[in-house]
Image 1 (cartoon, rainbow, N blue to C red):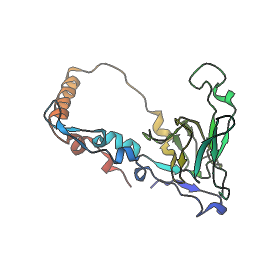
Image 2: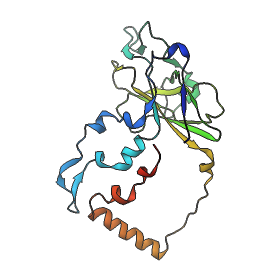
Image 3: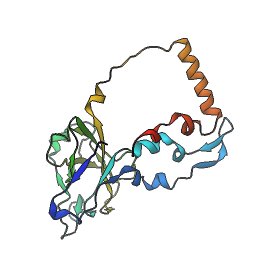
Image 4: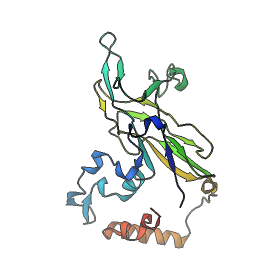
Length: 238
């Protein structure tokens, strides 16, 4: 079985929360949502919420979550009103730093105008076998987080240093508390050879059109057909 390894400096071992399977970090908004809406849909089946959508749950469960290593809180500077970040004085690691605004064009009109780019300091080095890379993504569908991480892909079979996490702040207001263990970045390994797949782009044949129509009919008239026949996650090794 292919193995991913997370390495931290020896002096941090046991002092910071470790990476965990992403399936253990589903956001509260998703966990707390009831599966059914208490009404029928237009096809007569139980009306379901996104909590019952297996593709949504499955994508959030991919890979591992690297969490914030220490508590981080925010407040407004009493003189300027600007957002300030704080962490415990005895924290074993400085958890964040700043980037220059020009690195994301924050001094020009565009999506980041006026933003201050920041970065989380990641203490965990990711080691993968030859031929493997990893996507470092904003924790998928964690809409409740008051920041947005920039996504990236790294060849972790070659890089021997941790990957820090650039982000910009999205929280409304000034008083936030992010405890150690809050999802910081989602790491999804992939084999680079699998990315070389070719693509075919065309219209459906008559037979393929019939298959799609029959499948759509089953989707809207048979309860749980997706989980029973169209989901293959159970075939993967754990």
